[in-house]
Length: 435
Image 1 (cartoon, rainbow, N blue to C red):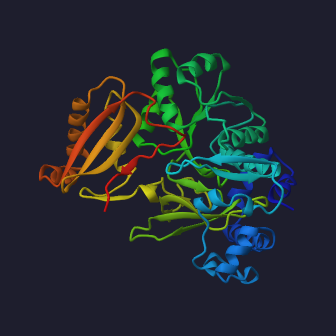
Image 2 (cartoon, rainbow, N blue to C red):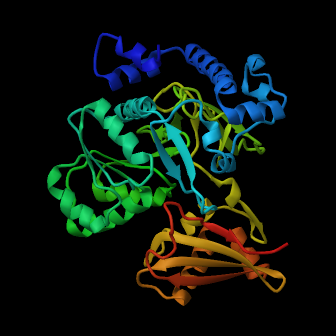
Image 3 (tube, helix red, strand yellow):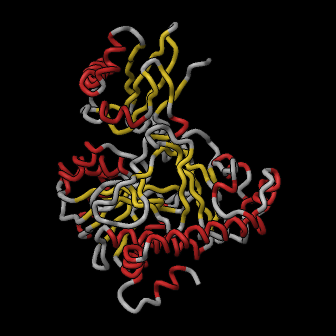
């Protein structure tokens, strides 16, 4: 019996309410035992049914019948490149549907297969998370997620079916048109990409808002300054969810306390590998409820760390911090080790540029030259450079000192709006140096 069938036998409330009740009240020891048992069962299942895992386990001399924990798999992991190269070899049974993830560094998409029952289960988990932050049957939800081959829209729709609430799928249309068409729907919850929701809020600030209960962003990170601005426009909380197509929806979601992502341990077994002295490393997960295309120790490419202290809302289960960046976007330069999140407090206060920007590192003689390319609405490259230098002096004085001492160069470039992003995700740091 799966966990949804078990929960639905509880004789009270809606399915999402029951799930949240169980999550909050089941002893952590029992949840951990369920998680570990499901991990063991999934490893044995793929060893029997998946050509990919049969081959890889043989190469790594892994006896699935003896695996009791992730440590028993030693140095075995699955990666994005494995999925790109061998999606059909992962399959354990006939799929009903598929979704794709574009990533930031490859033109070839990752194709991930699912069953309709897995779509339903992911929607149930999403509904439990939404219930936990106050979404109810009487709410009216509007989604602005891209619907093309992407998992976020279908998972949200399945969550709304579980909640029994009104839902309208607008797609990632122009925010101005979205405002005009949704104004009269009395929408109380708005969901979309943070960068899209930022632009939508800028439009709503000029054209008018309506009473909104909650806004939820997913698909990319955002600065706290951006969050505060959106909340000031709509007079409501803005919460972040974190997920990947490979995990089929939300890996975790913030509570109203906004103190990290509550992990979806109903459906995943989480690890953080290659940790540094502060505990930061790459998030790795095993999908423990999937049977079409399970992923064993999948390397997410995202850098974070577990949060050890209890949640402000006294929620069980583990949490992780907001992402620090991607493994492939940590770059060693004359500035020091840089990552996209470091530039958000530098660039977000600058009026006249959009939220889409890119950092390029090149060689200028013997020096590193950092060029900030931004989509500008009303600013010149010269003015942009001056504002960036001012922000560096305020926000990163050590970097500013190195710049003043001539250790590296800073340049700026302005490009038209909507010209940098060629897919759903934008590669923030590009290293063009040749060593």
